[in-house]
Image (cartoon, rainbow over all chains, first blue to last red; front, side, top):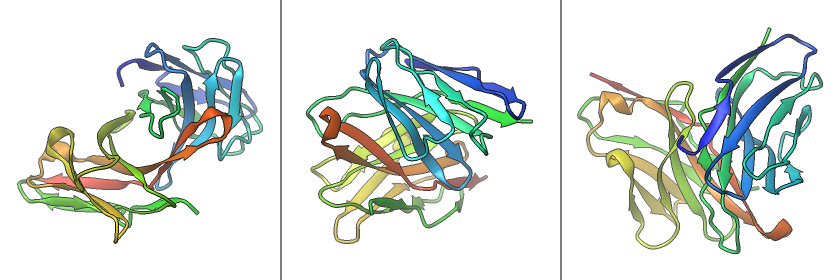
Length: 115
Length: 118
């Protein structure tokens, strides 16, 4: 988990509320990612960003939004439009470049529960 | 479609016995393959990777994995299991997407829970 911090570790939200999950990295990585983890489904990509002020939708972006105002930070907002937000959320980062492989490093995760 | 399959939801093994966690993949081209481990309410920890070269890859904590191109498999193995190896294991394949200057996308399997009993 070194180099990537996520906060809070546990988060509770009432239905209809937006909530923002924090992700910070000090690895000087250009790329950052958000994944959602559900039991029996592995990890699914929500959003990714390769550069400040730019980001792309992943496989399950509906009901989520992100921003990338600083290289070190990539917060994820879970909006009220996300129908089933209870899950474990993981942030990751990596270098980018012309090589075909850039290893992703993962943060410790945030467990979101909707009450 | 690019995919990774982990056919076992759970693997049970006695401490001291060898363990195998299975993974098969379906991708075009040469795959970059990974194994990660996750302990409860924690992030993913990197175990090992196959990029090129020897088919037998050695990683952290005594784990190894064998790349088999003809069977499109990348099974995780350890000669002697420990109770502390009990965790959730994920196999993943890296896809390199050329658009937007090059982007690496990880495709994960559903995970296999390893339970090592004393």
